[in-house]
Length: 434
Image 1 (cartoon, rainbow, N blue to C red):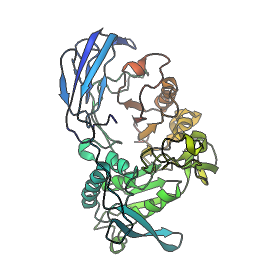
Image 2: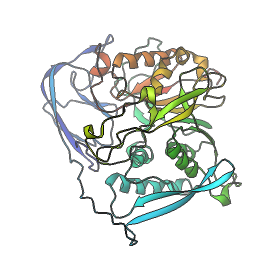
Image 3: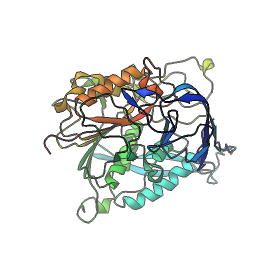
C-alpha cells in the first residue's frame, strides 16, 4: 500500500535537468541550486547524489526548482500479516474490558471489545505508546482505545514523541517563503519549539477519544476544554479523562488538571445551533473509521448502493445524528479568555472558520498565541483557498508555517493539492497584552 511503517531509513535520489527558481522575489539558496531536498530544515543536493534519512519520522520536502525532475525512493514497505480466524467460543479469542463512563449524574458502563488473537501493527505500536504515556500521567488510568479502528493511528500520531508528535514542531523552519511583508516573521533557520508545554489553558477541538487532551495534561497544562460531537468517541473521551478515584481530590501532589468536556461541533456560524453529523464509512479492509466523522456539509461520504462498494464490510447507508453546534469566535464561542493554545481538527469545518472575517481579526482570537490545525485538502483541494485562510491568520498577527512551505505546490498559481493526505499547519503570534 506504499506505506513504510516500521522501517527506520529511506533512500532518495533525484534525476533530470533542473535548477534554481526565484520565489516571491527571493532566490532559494540550498540544495545545490534548486530542487534539493529539505530534511528538518536542512537542504541537501540529491541530484544524482543519493541521500539516506528517516523518511517515516523526519519532515522533508522539495526545494522550488525549474526544469524536469524525477525522484526515486527506496524504502521497506509495511508487511501484511495473515489475519487469524476469530472463534466465538469462550477460550479467550475475544477479550472484553469494562469501564465506567460518567453520563450526567449517573455512572453507566460501556463494553469495549478488543481482539486478542490478532492485532495490526498500528494496534501493537499504540499499545506500547499507551503504556509509556501511562507513566507520564499516573493520575489517570491507561488510555482506552478500540482495536481494528483508526484510534491507533491517532495515538501513533500524537503520543509518538520520539517520532515528533503531529501537533508539535521542533527544529528549524527551513525554506519558508511567507506571503506577508510585515518584516516580523522568523527568518529561515529559526529554531522553533511549538508545543502545548507552558500553556495554562488549551482548547482541543475535535477531541476524539481524548489522546491530545491527555497529551496536553502530560505536558503540564492545567486546564483543557475539549469539544467532541460524536457519541461513541465522546463515551471514550469521558472515560479517558476521568482521574483515578483516589486522586480526584489530590491536585497538589498529583497533576490531575481540569478537563471540561463539551458535546458540540465547532463551526464558523456566529451563534449556537444544530447540525447533522455523518459517521464515516469503514475502510475497505473493515477497519472502523472513527476519526473522519464530520458535519454533512463537509462529509466526503455519501450513501451508496451496497453493490457499488468495494467491500461487504462497509456501510451502504451512512449513520446520521443531530448534534449541537457552537461558533469558534464571539462572546458565546469556544475560544474563551485564558485559552492560549488551540488545536483545531474538525474535518472540514476549519475551512469556513478560517476563511471567515472573524479569523483575520486580532481580537477574535483573544489570548491565543499558538494555533495548530489540520487543513482538509481532501475536501477542498484548491491551494489558493488555503492561501486565503493563511492570509487571514497573518492579518490576525500569526506567523504561519507548515511542511513543504515554499515548494512548488505552495508557489505556483492555480495548483490543485497533489497529495492524498491533509496538511498540519502551525501558527504563532505574540499576545499584545503580554
